Amino acid sequence: MIARQRQTLTKPLQNLLLRFLTTESTPPRLANPPSPVDPAHLLRVCTILYQQQNSPEPRLHSNLNSLSFNLTHEFFLQVCNNFPLSWRPVYLFYQYTQQANPTFAHTAVSLNKMLDVVGKSRNIDLFWELINEMGRRRLVNHATFILALKTLAKARELKKCVEFFHVMSSRGIECDKEILNKVVKSLCGLRLVEEAKFVVFKLKEMIGVDGVTYKCLIDGFCDVGDLVEASKIWNLMVDEGFDPCVGAVEKMMETLFKTNRDVEAMTLFQMMRVKRMGDLGLSSYRLVIEWMCKKGKVENARVVFDEMRERGIEADSLTLGALVYGLLARRRVNEAYGIVEGIEKPDISVYRGLMKGLLRLKRPGEATQVFREMIKRGREPNMHTYVMLLQGHMGKRGRKGKDPLVNFDTIFVGGLVKAGKSLEATKYVERATKRGLEVPRFNYNQFLHYYSNEEGVAMFEEVGKKLREAGMVDLADIFQRYGEKMATRDRRRNRVVEPLVEGS
Figure 1 (cartoon, helix red, strand yellow):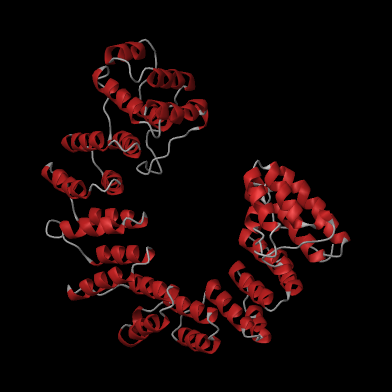
Figure 2 (cartoon, helix red, strand yellow):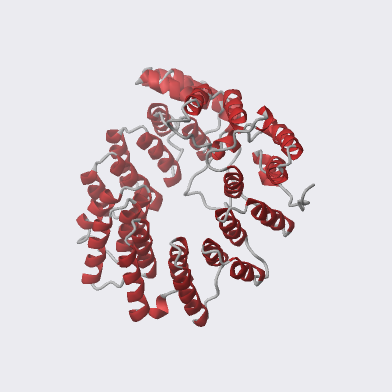
């Protein structure tokens, strides 16, 4: 275990100057900003904590006392940041602050930071001891509840999850539905929905539940694909007199659509139209329209779209983009262009739907022209747009050109080798040599990722020139634009939209 801790702590000690304080409990504005920490003092303290973490306590305290450093909350938090997965140095330093510096008073923020480190290292016994101590000192906030339940649930300590609420309540700390809902939402976001359900049902009599609690559970079960449990929670919520909110209805519909249970999803939507028409908003209509367009049911989508407009609900860019794609998928090109031309300021979602539909119709040149027009109007494409255009021009398999400079297998393998990914390059070559048995799919995401550096900028420029010489003007524009504006993080952050001249 000590060897593992040494390996974990090597990197933090080498990057002390690059770590900054980030805590969820820190307010956006502080009346008294934290005092700066001396990096040299921080390095000395962390070195002693690391090297003497197994030494007797008096010796460790003596060595720390020999250092002249200013112990502040910021200093303690920085020490925790430098040992993110090793509980022993952090806990020893906490004991030092309690014994050698009795005037130093911890806060809920500093104790939560230490608690997070202990939880990540899976020392549940010490974690539970610290939780009880925080309860006795009443240094507990909402973040403490979320952190405690998250750690205990991951360790499958379900009884302690429930006991935690009873312990806090016995210490005079309020445990209400607001805190419970925040905890349940956090657990469901981590896909710990079974653990969240256990906590809710065990605390039902003590704290109680409301519609928000049930909605979080429904969302959690839908996210993990368990529609049976989601339906049970739904029925229980209705039996207890809670009306399902629109968010819960939309989540159920979305999950039903994803699992190809279209009839049940549309039945749920129809129920909302009959009983709760006033609650239906843009998000509900968009969900149904996107699914209908994806399935090629454009006429039904137009009916729902017209109903939405009649109710005075204005369509957003995502809805219009889905409708444009659905029309193009049914080869109704003029209608699709009519919708786009009727939009005063088309968003990237509209252009993406237009390009996706054109690529489905095998019109990559026309899609590239839309790409140029989008940039001309000040709409900068994202990574998904570039990948979609490359697949449209070259197919999912990729282009096996005669010219080695335009051979994307060669470019990709060379990029993998330069990036130090020799094993992945070897696997790709093995797949490529067995084209008769397995058609390899060219991974455009990896291709763009491995060349997203300054070396890639020069490569994209060179490839663009070769493609232009080979008569592939559209591909040349796509690659050159990516190299100019997207190849590095700094370029993506500081990019300025400039018109892209067709055929330049």
